[in-house]
Image 1 (tube, each protein chain N blue to C red):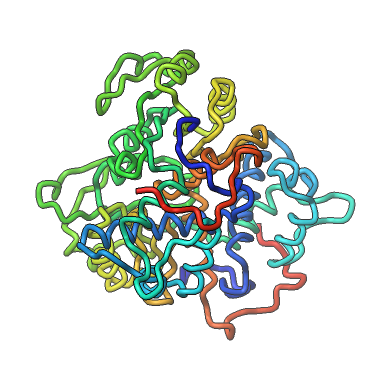
Image 2 (cartoon, each protein chain N blue to C red):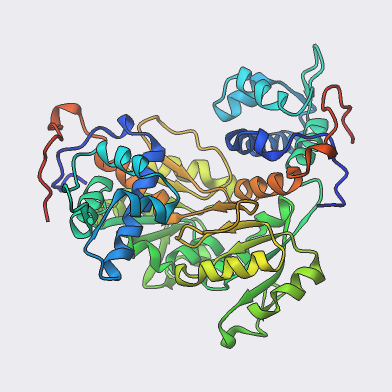
Length: 233
Length: 233
């Protein structure tokens, strides 16, 4: 956010998405170590906790500066603060939820978000029968009120939990309201301006990954050549 | 599953994860085209719908055989059947849900799964106060009953929606019950035998990706060199 203190980071597009994902994993393990009373750690320990090499850990962190101390390693509290600042969760993000069906309700009740610095401050839906109902302290509002809700709460991130049929229009209304970061749960590919950051969580795709793995993990002896294999209807 | 008819595919580890994800996207667009009454399509049309090049579409499909017809392109119904067979969703997968909190309840109510070939047939939890309650037609059972539920329903896939503190133990019980495909929603890295296929959906990591993008998408003129930048506490 504009109020953020951090001014010493590369532009996001200079850092691979995978590096940012691993930063999140490092942050989580560092916070767990802190809860366990551990004061200092090392790239070797962090790597072992996550199944990465120590070189990977050092390389990832090197994108953002020098955080270790010779003969000491990393001070957990310092590295937690540094990684939070890099990720941008050294402050809380007000988030708007668009779509309050089964999944949306679960997300409203999902404590994990606020613990990680994301606070759902408003929820909108297009179903008038939901307007005015309060879930987990959040009143469901008409999606038409999105622009004022965004202004009122200084919202910078949105979560789309709307059905696939509505998601593109909902996304366009979110962007029109001035939000450029969207977490999309709807099973469609959103077509939005390139400056909008979109992360997608597609449960069917994740399940299909497993289905593919379970279906195809058979001994090679069972496999036939696939060339010219006719389609079965 | 062992009953699956398809015998003409490469082992899963021979195909990049990204290719399988794109197969899921192709399947979805093909099914949408079918619903719209479209009979044939092309790598160019599929690519445009998803923001990929036609060459990408052809290259992905070429991992699994030859599906197009000269001068015709792809017959949607044939390619849908072929991709479903490749992914393994030409049949329905019985799935067990482990952990029936907010997220678990939403997943039980999530119609999208069954539409895509995944049918939650059993749900387990470790909280005795939930035992015997029925949600969306599924009775919540003690996790101790997992082995017999897996046998009874021929379950091959599991979804973990348990808290982070319980997820590793839950995962080990799932594997011990003979399940080798797990979709994990708990925000921890599961340590399981290499033959177990695990997909993870970590909402905090997705949100942190957005936070990072929003935090760091600033004009380079605002950026200071990061070398030797002291940590702020």
